[in-house]
Image (cartoon, rainbow, N blue to C red; front, top):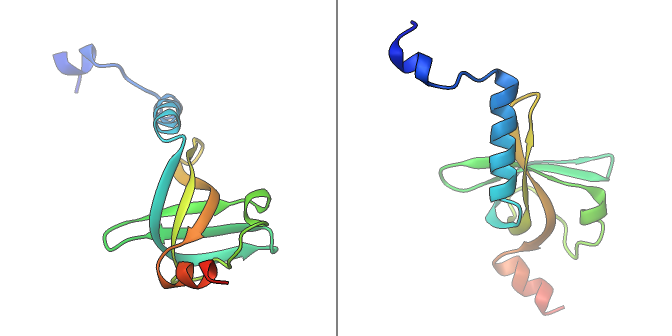
Length: 117
């Protein structure tokens, strides 16, 4: 497998590659807005919220810590269409990424009902 192309390319360890991915993703996506439908919602000990945000083709994991979700004016629940503000976070040990949500707001009919209250 040692051909000329391999010898000229940098060979990463798994940890090095995950670190590079973390640095690139976290710096590129440090303040984003993301819209989608809530699925696989889990409210851990009534503190931290874990869920997927999905559209018709993809999904991404989201966590919203208690310090950010305690002041929400609506309840996040399964099937709700929402807009979140947050940033990408990479967990290097597992090579996984997720969105850490700092704020959320409903989209559509629920948003209209809340705004008229």
